[in-house]
Length: 105
Image 1 (cartoon, helix red, strand yellow):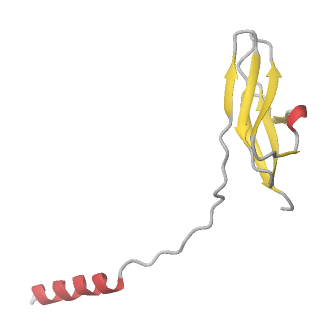
Image 2 (spheres, helix red, strand yellow):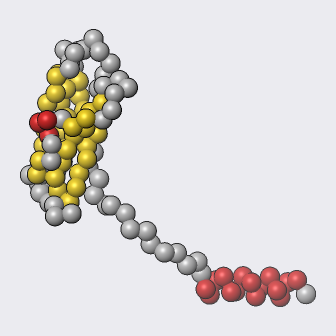
Image 3 (cartoon, rainbow, N blue to C red):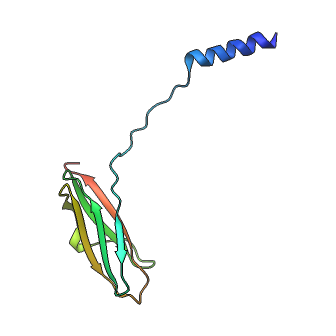
């Protein structure tokens, strides 16, 4: 008696399948490449899209995130973009993050 019930349950899932709802996500997510030498010169590079604005934020040690003045809501070029920063090499290494927003959005 258990075998037909198991078979019917298996047949039900085979015919109905799983139902899922697609989740909308931000597909565009550029990577920020960072290099820093021993003199504190830092290069930040990313591939841009001309339909986005970009802002780079930095953080020293335990301070709050601040906008880099040189990369504050600049429009993408559709190519590789670069920003340079210079820090005191005796202080903790800065952390950086790239924020992007769609034009008109």
